[in-house]
Image (tube, rainbow, N blue to C red; front, side, top):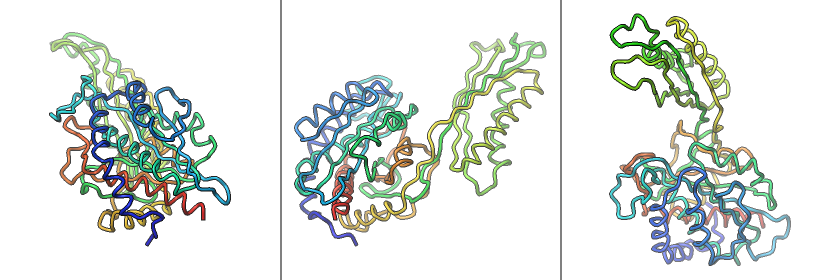
Length: 403
């Protein structure tokens, strides 16, 4: 069992003192969702909300990010140490149906992945550590990162040198609200915990014509339907049954009216995997399936395949460390063991590829609405546990480093 460097009850009192304000902050941020790389109002609001702290704000890395350093006042005996904590800040292009009084005021955009809750937790963590800056040495880097959804803002910021700038981090941590486990509980799997995510676009070009004389056309809709079915056999018939892989066609566009066969159909989708060898197999088999079906139909095709997020790999030692912190600060009942890995993707993977750390899951409730659903809203009852764990991760990492 970890011996806490600060009294857990004292930490709890400090968090509960600010909790009503942090909850209000969360709901205020929920009202102003902004999608990838457009988070200008959000980042301005974050800067205002942390202006009363001792954080040293840095110049933005990719435009709408907010990054700053909070320095402890205790002296290190040796090398300066940094812990980096990250929250994503972007929203999704979804029309919210939660019905809450703090629902989105931006039509067609919503915080349906809980990033408003992540921001609130990190702002709360900053305010708590600001009060406790005389208890630690070194620094905590706070990263409010844009464009986690689709655009890979995490990769952009890592490529811009976020983790190479002094003080370089010795550990990185982030959390994500997680429906399906009890509110306020914590889970993290060692090793590969989330999948890699690539994208593809297939264009099937045929010869359009009247719907009453299909024999005079090369029908791209029928051809595309066969492709969709054929792609599903790659996972079921080309991968070993114990291997993890996903191919999903998520959009199909073709035709404009009910009696005209179009000239082309455009399909887009995603693939997921953990093993690079599976990616290679999926790519080659996709090309073979699409080429063969189009050749049989007399159609032409193009297939664009682009690599996206890499697998997210948690450091096993840091997962053990997290479990000890949860036990010491929240109680052993708050730890959820053996939560399985998922095929979802997350751009915090690019942080973890450079610096050891953990992407942890914060329980929102066993029956809570699912992520990316129009009815989703972050569970405020989980905020206290989130702040507690993120604060303790920073404090204990720096305490151990200081000796």
